[in-house]
Image 1: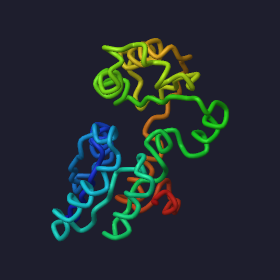
Image 2: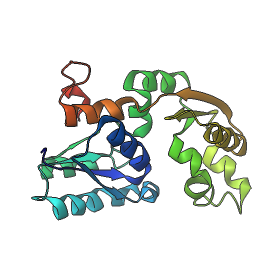
Image 3: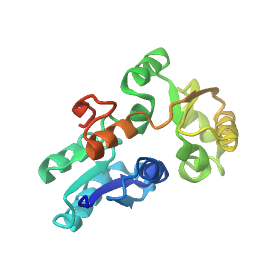
Image 4: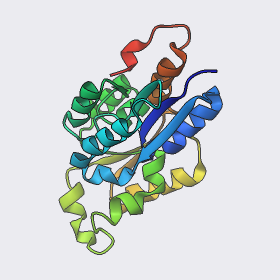
Length: 209
């Protein structure tokens, strides 16, 4: 029997990681999540992550961090280096869902782009509108989003309700709407490297930060 491995994940990735666990048969994968709302206060993420790692060291063969940098300006990287664990690649979930090269091309094409994932489309009011008080003060839209030109929905699954929610989000922010279906992108391939050791027979260790 394979020894259990712990994934400490951003709550925004919980559903996707559960689905990958099911589809790949990773029964040895255990997961603990940190509240996705901390993305509104990213400076708090590294120490919360460190606490989780230290709570679980010795209980698992390996601990893997399902976060990118996520606006912590290197804070998560300092924690994983000090605690000798690995994390997902990239600066944020938009990059690893879209793939590094495709995301760079989209960002170069239009720097003023706001991105949504399935999770953000589903919880747009709770994670964007209400925290920014746009429900009470819609005139603040220009202060927050005046430099944005478009919204790109990077979907993980094909879901008509989520697509509709993403279009509504673009309308509420007065942004042009684009939809790019990504699937799980480098989230899946990075976890395959960790739990299977390879992807499609290739050494893909570069997918880990």
